[in-house]
Length: 274
Image 1: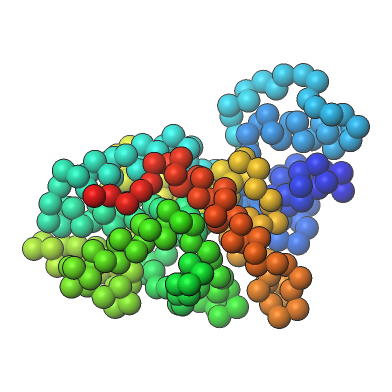
Image 2 (image 1 turned 90 degrees about the vertical axis):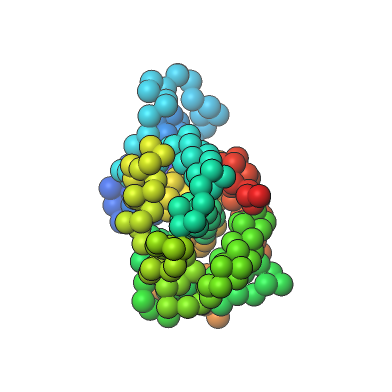
């Protein structure tokens, strides 16, 4: 109980340190890597709740424990820079695929998107920058996501470019398309396509790693674990924050997107490319 209190209700950290399952703690822990300094400090506070701060320096504070294959902030920044440079210097199919990968990075970080084969937006409410994502094949697992301003601008610019290319984003290949010779659409932009391009810029993790990065980085930036779990779709059956009897206020998801997620996207250097 004390650990949950000092960790602001982070079920992932609770599962990591205690090893027991509480609610959706397995899912939360699966996506979370925390810095050693944060973990040690919160564990010490749980042991002595009257302790105002960590009395000793924590060794190896630059290391992290928890989920594996979580990219660092710097690695994402380098990937963003590399893809932006590729967009600026290439043409034809190479240009289109680089721009698609660039937009996909922003989308999957900004929505904590899963690395799925074909991306479709189930619903778009433009007046509130909301989209509905369905990623597990069940209507219950659809989640409503607020697009942060930077992501909203990037997606709008990308959709306009797709229209200029004569491609329909709701077509058989989905929102993100892989372009082949003569700049013709060849199929969905798959996680394998992403990995192939990302490796050219020194990023050797898969597309799914961006989802683990999103939760881990948002926690390190002080976002509420409850808001992050609601944002990522981590809930037990019949406990969705979007259920009719839910007491979770959706305005917190809006505040999360417009606040810490927006700052994260800007810090990564993501912006509409000329």
